[in-house]
Amino acid sequence: MSEHRFTVGERVKVDTRNPSGHIRTPIYCRGHEGIVERICGKFPNPEQLAYGKDGLPAQTLYRVRFEQKSLWPSYSGPSHDTIEIEIYDHWLEPAGS
Amino acid sequence: MPHDHHDHSPIEIDEGMPEEAQVLSEALRELLIEKGLFTADDVTKQVAAMSKRTPGNGAAIVARAWTDPDYKSRLLSNGPSAAKEMGFDIGAAQLLVVENTPDVHNVIVCTLCSCYPVLLLGPSPEWYKSKNYRKRTVNEPRAVLKEFGTELPDSMEVRVHDSTADMRYMVLPERPQGTEDWTEEKLAELVNVDALIGVSTANSPV
Image 1 (spheres, rainbow over the protein chains, first blue to last red):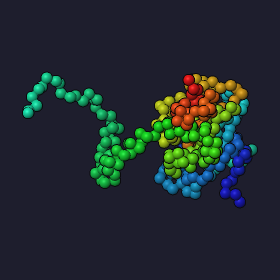
Image 2 (image 1 turned 90 degrees about the vertical axis):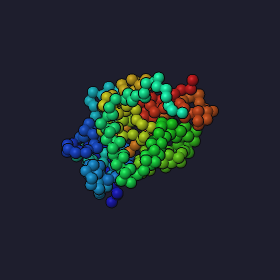
Image 3 (image 1 turned 90 degrees about the horizontal axis):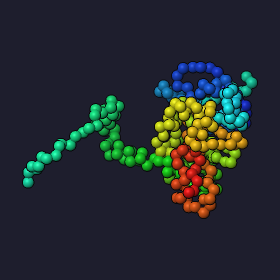
Image 4 (image 1 turned 135 degrees about the vertical axis):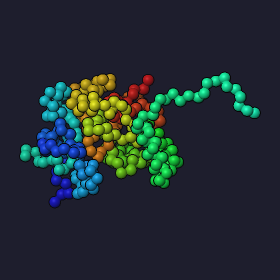
């Protein structure tokens, strides 16, 4: 079994949950689908670190590329404009789910 | 000889009352020094080290990448180690260098706070921390870039990087034309903090 749940190029979806606390997943990408651009490695979970815990087990951090037009229906630039966002593993699920 | 001329007014401190945060930080510093956690000399050294963090560091890295293709590929594949080669040790921090090309223009923002590689870019500009920049760069980057004087054709992709987690970013701008025989030192002068964040391009030679 691979060390990471998703591979580069794989289509993923960001969870829509809305917990309070120190969350590093921007609201504007929640519920949207993108492509894994790269795997950054494993890092302690900041949602735990912020409250003095150890943040373990470390979470895989992905960079996910979204099409701007898929995030903002009124986006006025060309359709090839993109945005890349760092998202931890526990916020991602396979696309289409 | 006694000091006996009194024809000038006494030295006045006209800075007004210190800010609350200033009083707190001074009290904290004195307390920590008194407790022996660090010395006044440590504080002075740290301030000196902090003042060496300028966009000139990032510019030197860019100029090396422009003149040395092998260095450039090392920089793009492993930012921290390539920065260290140039004498900038960013420690355990992560660094991703993203390259501008004729087809892609990169721009950095941190919508959640103001994450930013201070060692290589210097203290972040006020506008980088503003809500206006953080909010608008993600959904109307071309309008923001235009306000910085950077107008890009629709044929180019604008790629925004939201620095939301553990990575820190620096843009590798395109090398301006007409600089083919320039030295690294001279090239570095064309790169300012705006170009390293990606709201502008490197300056053209005058």
